[in-house]
Image (cartoon, rainbow, N blue to C red; front, side, top):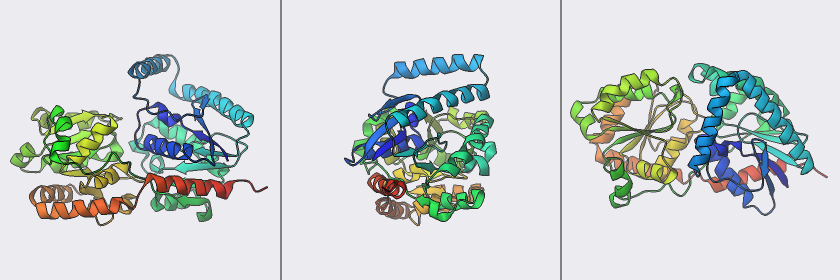
Length: 387
């Protein structure tokens, strides 16, 4: 099968969709029955790019270029021009390479004569538009539905998103397939000795901090985590800081002002975006993961914590119960008191915490990237034109 695969998410630092794109692309490339053609925002290749973080000079150049363009061209016009140029390059490449199936792993599908498969990770820009930049909401509203309607098959990360598609767009159930994501081998349990080097560089001690992972943006609901954490006794906060890991997103100014006193006191540590190995080590060394998101299509950080034998306190909404199950503590994402109680229980009850850690590790084995890849290939075969 000749597959066109939009690998453009690999051009930026990898968050959730980037991780999905990377692990799926690597798995597909390894299958001898597939001829993979990867599209990188106008450039075609048969190679999977490892990471946008690999060359800092390239990242700096791209950042400078984006800044220059932003000053001279309005956002909406810039995206339309970029989309037009990429569509032209994509369509020509598909025709030249006789593509049989096109897979769009990141929502907004290009037009293509071949059957298309589109992955829909969530519908958060519709359910919670105020948690996204206005320009992104406008782009999603403009380009998403036409691609959805053209798709031969739609993949989702969870049964929750499948149902959301059916409810909001009327997409028939037989055109949607739920394929869960996985956790890579770098996420595994680690001893205190194994985490020592990385944690000491960050001023952290194994098992002596609470952790929140994700882009700093409204949907992650870190304001609730901050409110709950701030209500813990001062001595507890002093011994167990709250560590935030992830890129800075948008609408964070109020959150940063609210955090400032606790940051100054050393009770909140903001580490920013970490390389994958360092992230895995920081997760493995945490007492527990705090994930109070108001809406997720899957939620990779909880699964990665579970695979590291780190218990999770998570929201009880959207897809998160599908991932966490009964191996963690599920709370209402509007209930700061419930979150604070869960944090305190994790800190104070070692037996309870260790029991959850073991259950989390066992449940994490239900999810794998190998399974995600094999189910995706099976989906391709469903839409492959019959001779």
